Amino acid sequence: MLRRPAALLLALPLALGALLPATLSPAATAHAETARRASAQVQLTSWSSYAELKSGTRRGAKLGRGQVSLLAPTPRTVAGKAYEAGTWTSPWATTAFGATALVPTWEATTPGRSLVRVEVRARAADGRTGSWDTMADWSLRTRPVPRTTYSGQTDDLGRVSADTWYAADAVTAWQVRVTLMRPRGSSLPVSLERVGAVASVDASAPRPTSRPGPAAGTVLDVPTYSQMVHAGHYPQWGGGGEAWCSATSTAMVLAYYGVAPAPTGITPGHVDAVVDHTAKMVYDHGYRGTGNWAFNTAYAATLVGGDSYVTRMRDLREAEDYVAAGVPLVISVAFGRNQLTGAPISASNGHLLVVVGFEADGDVVVNDSAGASNGEVRRVYDRAQLERVWIAASGGTAYVIRNG
Image 1: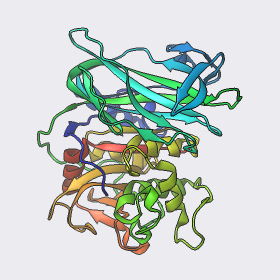
Image 2 (image 1 turned 90 degrees about the vertical axis):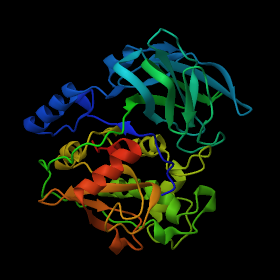
Image 3 (image 1 turned 90 degrees about the horizontal axis):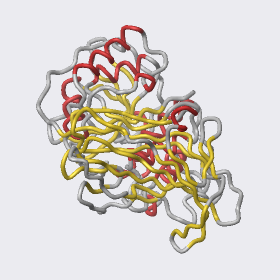
Image 4 (image 1 turned 180 degrees about the vertical axis):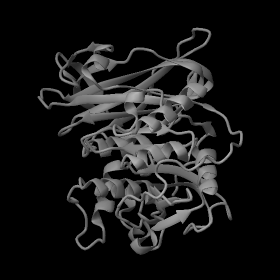
């Protein structure tokens, strides 16, 4: 919970077929492609392979096998600390529609006291180019520069709100720039493996409930963790309980893949200490919470061998393609009283939960960490209700965390 409400966004399938689950059936792939052609209101663009990363511009950095690393870095000062830095800047990504929001995500290696800075800028249809806006300074260990976002930046084309860049008016192209930094004089192998963003456009018109698809009758064996049993834990990372829905959901998905690390720096005896550990690792010191979408997927990327990113989806039918391929999804919802029957809480202005499967009739099996105990986390929600509060609240935002 305590995820801020997002803009109402129309979320349609991925623009890049390569980012769909690797094991999708031909029928599922055809469905996604048909939907993609039917509209172009969302576009996920990323760079990860050698050829893709080669299309960008490098300064003080080199390109290796699927990663960008430092080569001839230049001095940089961050938070009063001396660093040496190099940058990778993407080509312009163009959209076939006027985008009103960007959510960038990345996969990076930041050993020791190294970090990455992620920035975006956009271009309007009339050719105006906005300034570079800093989205985040991110590192796995968050020292000496805190892992943080920079809300409130405003230029003539848009503004930053934690993990999302919102356009003042619709834009038709965007770039992302990543700066790799390590303490001056060190040789830490900081690197960038993947970066991209999902662009989308505001739209809140009601749509018919999606029909059940290939995941009907499939339930993935995702462990159940309750966020509520952590109430009062670690105020410096949000205090557990209602604040930890995102961290708890991410922890459940990592445990499903068997890649959750041994907790460090956690009080002995805490039940499901991996949840406390995950909260520590995804905490955003600027937003002051664990609900930063990009920080959750960036952390997960350090543990899984596959992709980890934020996207937006049109409906639960598209989500079924992932579940059918063995990929649970963390989704962002918000709801009022009587809008989500069977939920363990009566209302929320921002909550994340894990879609783990679908019943034969298409209703949705979830791990909702708002359950009072681990035994009360598994729930079944009405398909129409869940789809409505997911799309209306976050435009179908989902974490795709896929093990290699």
